[in-house]
Length: 480
Image (cartoon, rainbow, N blue to C red; front, side, top):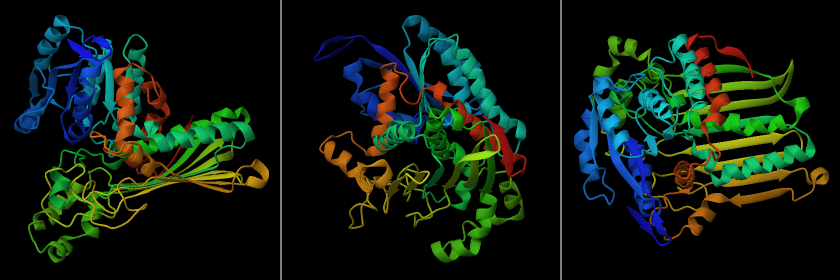
């Protein structure tokens, strides 16, 4: 049993499915941080057989230990239903104690199986984005449409379930973006002008070497999806979430979206930076085997590294909101080594550049800027503000002659949060704190800002973008 200063705390039994880089950086430390407060127990941790040695090494000396480990055979991990081999373990567990929740942090192709099982058994879920990731989604129109069909299937099951399902889309729990959403909501409601322009830009700074394009399992391309199912989901979601404010004006609420899509893939990248370039930059010819005609042909089916989306939300034949969503993994990086670092999630030269620019007609402009110059925890640049790992600034410009207030306001979210949490051992940054807020929604059974039910439009847009890509039909019109 768990005890805290306030007295008795009943046990909360959780399953962790997937102990990859994200779970190791975020979920496991949070489970340890809140173990005493919430009486957390981990009766089962699930991963794939090929990761057994790595998982056991990670768990050595951790303050919270799983009571049992189960390793799914790698050949069974990418199915729509759980492998038969694990069902007796789950059955015995459910009948020996009350299971309160499952954290699903597996490779995305396995998400559907765990979520369906949890919903059918009224178990709460904290689910990493994306909701599901059918293989070959960028090459097969049926797979692209399956993205939304999967969501609808889960939605229907949830109506008959007591599960609380939270999607880990952390920008919905981020202080900066919550500030923007609140500001926009009040402004649009007060002045009756819709959000007229949205510019979203995100660059991962993640340089995958040629062999990694073909082999990597963390943030893969070889399964026919890429950036959109990696960090790109957050920005499709951010667009859907922010433009919700237009529903506040009934006469201007959009009823359709006109989408144009362009992509950049590993097939393109292997021409952009070719074998001779790697020889010159890294003084190695070990990547030459990945530039053969056979390899280049195989790369044609790989998922996207970059995606560029231009879209317009319309009411009838009139434009309400124009948006530009530019998502890159082929972008500025600090990686200058050929062999991957042990931490391929945050420690492999990856740096984030993120920009948001919002216009409300001629009345308001809100900008968010977040730019890193070095890897997290590896500062080698003397700078303040832009370039630091905590950088996140808001700029608010107002037509003060008409709407009042000051013409310009600057809000330093990143620095304020760093000062607020100074000396806190578990504080990793503003994005990580946002993840923590959604983790607490899951623990406390709150719907919060990122409940499954609020992601319908996000998933529908994601499926539509993939359908445009798979169809090689850059333009698509979708009723909302």
